[in-house]
Amino acid sequence: MLFKDGLIFTAYPPRIWSWRNPLSPEILLPALLVAQGMVGGIDTLVNHEIIERLPHRVEARDEIGLHWVREFIYACLFGGLAWFEFHGATAILIAALLIGEIIVTSCDEYIENKIRVLPQNERVLHVFLTLNLGLLIAVLVPTLIGWGGLPSGLAPVEHGLLSWMLSMFALLGVGWAVRDFIAWRKLRRLSSAAMA
Image 1 (tube, rainbow, N blue to C red):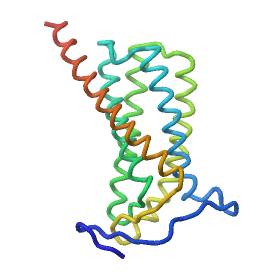
Image 2 (image 1 turned 180 degrees about the vertical axis):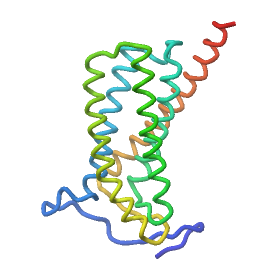
Image 3 (image 1 turned 90 degrees about the vertical axis):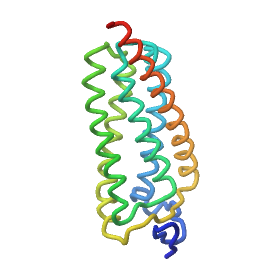
Image 4 (image 1 turned 60 degrees about the vertical axis):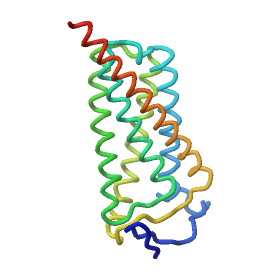
């Protein structure tokens, strides 16, 4: 064990993908996160930006407000789980992010269906995102329970290319969250000015 900045880091060799156990949580979790990042990115770029132009529509301000929160949540999940296991009390951080994502997704579905008609491809992408989120929950909950029983700390891991892809998605997620936060603030001001 290594101690650094008050946290305990456990060191062990990185896990290597094996044909003997391709469905292990160590393989499934980063793969499902990468799938979520890819499909979510396509949905955001194609539907929210190009087709619907949500950041420029005053009536979409509440939806954009939820989107920047979701993007920040996923950036934290991607960046954290790309390189670490969250043992002991630190597992609560990942659980809180997962619960936050479920709440944001539920609110987003309600709001977006209230303010606009979704394009058919967006509905299809949402089905895949929801199914994948369900798989993530199915893999992550027992993993978090297992991690919760270990001494508190961050355990470094590496998932090869998947870790680097998740890191890229984390950076993109932070950038897009900031961009949507700025758009949300602007839409709030425009909405307030329109009401005055």
